[in-house]
Length: 326
Image 1 (cartoon, rainbow, N blue to C red):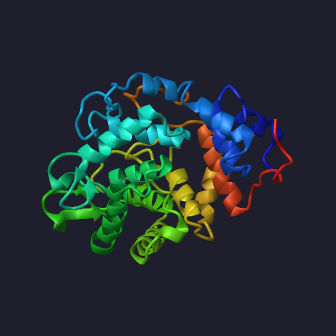
Image 2: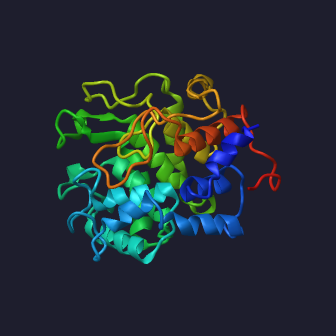
């Protein structure tokens, strides 16, 4: 059982984002539950979401009206991703941001989002992140989003998890190497498509992503091959940009219903828990409009993700539905 003191901490009304996510993802409350609706409504009015939205230009973009990838992590695409991770509803301001990226970031000849004008800016992580973001904000049936989902699945079928940023020559596909980070982001993006709406190509890409991840030793540093220094794979963070980590990889497997989860990877996550049943933030992004906690201190979002994984694996369980609620 998840300790009641931890649930009280996660459900703190002064922290509407983790409260909303806990009610939905751990306690299984429906979206129309009054407490769920109230928590979600409050997210955009308090930090960190409010700080992000306060930095937005009235036209919908952050920093400058371009594709929204640079500068990391203050440009438009990142803010939409972070707001989705916080569980925010699609307000008018967020909708303006979504429409901006939908029109500015697409490389139309390939039906995929690109970080810059050249096709070498088509990164799996970017497309997976944005696909999940747009599905969260209710754009899952938008023609651009539907096209990106299909094109991303086709890309997986043709290139696997190879990425131009993980190659010695971005314009030469023969030098591209697979990227575990990109696989995690794509898997989570495709998982955001309702199961009944996934075509064979999308399901095939999900199956391939599961095979790829389960074929890795997730307990070792899985940085892209061309990163020269140890990455943050084993340091749990929130939110994550183009990087991924061990916990997000397990979360991606949970979101597509993969069973069983890799035992040693789950055990490594469990070992990071403190004596009160909480997980610390081990890595925080820099150059953001808002923070999500202090490194080395217990973090609600990391703790929530960890319990989602442990509950799916069976080594933890939430209270029975309807038996817990502050």
